[in-house]
Length: 265
Image 1 (tube, rainbow, N blue to C red):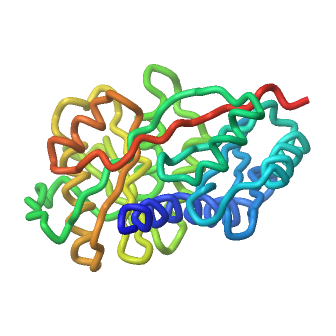
Image 2: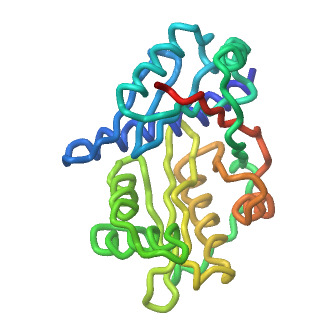
Image 3: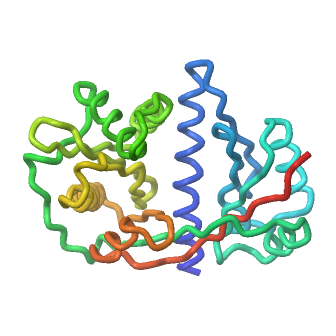
């Protein structure tokens, strides 16, 4: 039961954080993100040309009507597929429905967990990691966007996304500098004793210098000081980010299968 309850808390912080972000962004048109809440069962989000569902099968069984409602809503948003993040602890009714509806595997995600009550943090260099506020939020957001841009140019929508998550009161943002230049950043969300690390990014030219490690340690320390029991993070499978988490003491908690629908006509 403890494992299932932890999974519920992890998926809840992800879903409710995304929900709060969409509500905040919609206050400034023409943002077009939207959500469908299937009561006590999960959330479906539309962001850009993607639609994905989170949390289903962990609290109550998923019915054929639920899935039909979700697919109908996605079609109405002119999105061609619905992606459903499936936790391995989900009720089997969800798995059976996806099989019957010919959903196929798109990719896996690794979900990591750290018991911060047993973790002795080593604080990073205080001269390099700083909290984000109104004075440095713009350079922080551009550093985040530059990290995700890889070799391409900075995309304004990524800058706006970073600022949108920063604006939520449950989120704390952190910045790393190389000299005077903002080169890396990330966010810590906190909810009901659970912390989540996300939106972590380093400008490509500054990778390999330990900045991501500094960001991880700073956010763990902040989560622990804020009374969190656990910190979680989700990474793609077999990435440097995942290896960093494991090296710093995170344990693989479960692997989610992201299932995609057939084309929704």
